[in-house]
View 1 (cartoon, chains in turn brown, orange):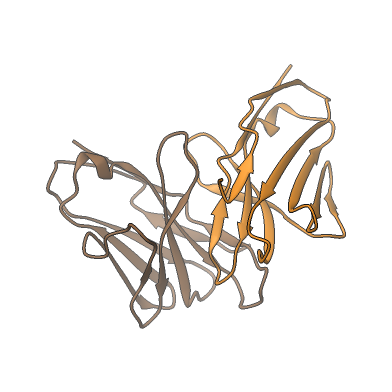
View 2 (cartoon, chains in turn cyan, brown; view 1 turned 90 degrees about the vertical axis):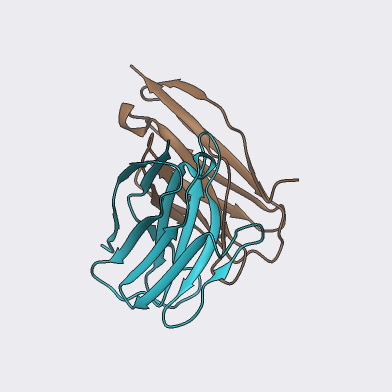
Length: 117
Length: 109
C-alpha cells in the first residue's frame, strides 16, 4: 500500500531554533501533500496544502512566514518551523493522496513530535 | 457548531461486544467520508471509506446518510486490539479534510 514517511519522529530543541520536517511519498508521486498539527486531546487541524512546484496554500490563522513549506519534487515536501517557541510544541503530521480521483483517501506519515524547551 | 461532531466517549466495552459510533457533519457540500483509527501518540490510519450504499469490511460496517448528514461505524465482536480513537473525517472539497475530535474506544477482557 501507499507509504508516506516523515523525518524526524521526535525533535526536542531550544526556543528560537528552526526545525525542518521532511515528508516523503515512498512508492507514489504526490503533487499535493498536506500538513496538519494536532495538540493533545484535540483533532487534527489542517495547516497548509503543499503544491509541487508552486506556493503552498495556508489555512486561516496559520502564519506562512513562520511555517515555511517547500515542495520541490513529486515525492518530498518540507515544513520548517522558524524560530520555534514552546507554544509551537505539537504533533505535526503530513499526508498525501494517492491518485487524482475525487474521494480517494489520504495516507498519513507517522508524524513528528516537536517539543520546544 | 463544529464542522464534524463526534461523541468523545470513552466507550468501555467487553470483548465480543458490538459498538456503534456516530458522527454528524455540517457542510452539505461535503464530498467524501472516511473513518480513520488513531492509536495513542501515533498517526491516523485509514480504516475505511464511507458510502451511501453502506460498506462492510470484516467486523466493521460504515454507513452514510447524506440527507441527515450523519455517518456511522459499527464494530462487531470487539477485540482488545480495537482499542483506539476513531476519527470521523469529511472531505469538504478541494481535498480539504476536516477531522472530528475522535471517539475513544476501550475494549476490556
